[in-house]
Length: 148
Figure 1 (cartoon, one colour):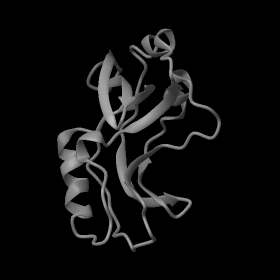
Figure 2: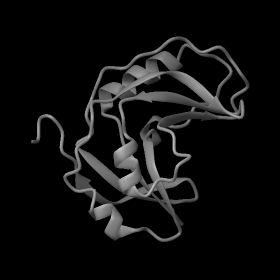
Figure 3: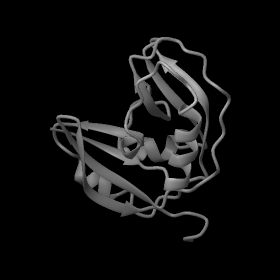
Figure 4: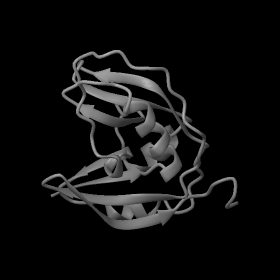
C-alpha cells in the first residue's frame, strides 16, 4: 500500500476534460474518478502530521490547461495556478510539477487545446493506493476565497 496527498477536481471540470478526451482516438484513458493532482507521495507510511498541518492553507484558483507528457509515455493535463507552496508544505520534493495524469502508454497522438473552468479545491485528501484502488483515508479543509 502506498499513500499520497491529492487534490481532486470538481465534477464539472472532470466532465469538461472527459468531453475533450472523448474526441481523441487510440489512447486508453485513466478512469475519471481517479483524476487528481498529486501534491506529495508519502510511500508506504503516510506522514499524517504533515498532512494534518495542511488544514487551512490557502489555495489558489486552478484550471487545467493543455497537455504534456513524461517520456512520451505518460500524458497529463497541465495545471494553471501556483500550487508550489502547498505541495512543499505537503512534503513534495524539488522535482515536483503540478499535473493531472490522464493516460499511460501514450504514443504521441496530437492533443487539442484545452482550458477548463476555474475552481478552488476546498480540501486536500490523504489517499491510500493498493492494487490500483484509491481509498480516501483523511481530508483537511483548505482556505479558498469563499472560505476566508
